Image (cartoon, rainbow, N blue to C red; front, top):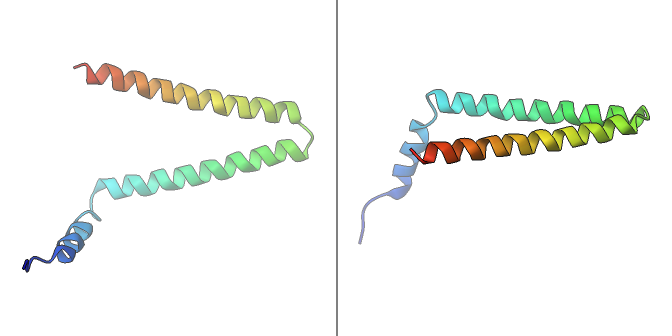
Length: 84
């Protein structure tokens, strides 16, 4: 029927996308997220084990506030840019 090899085409596309700036930025973003999560967990455990429960609660509230601020900012940015 069809002699076209789709697997070979996929392998060519996957090897082409391994060079450039996007994989480098992806690697940096991945490690930035991992390091940030590690620091966040260590800080939360420090607050819990040292008995600073109010600071731990304020830390969690601050993280939630920052998350929703970033979400709202990106929503506004997307809304304003999509109108053009």
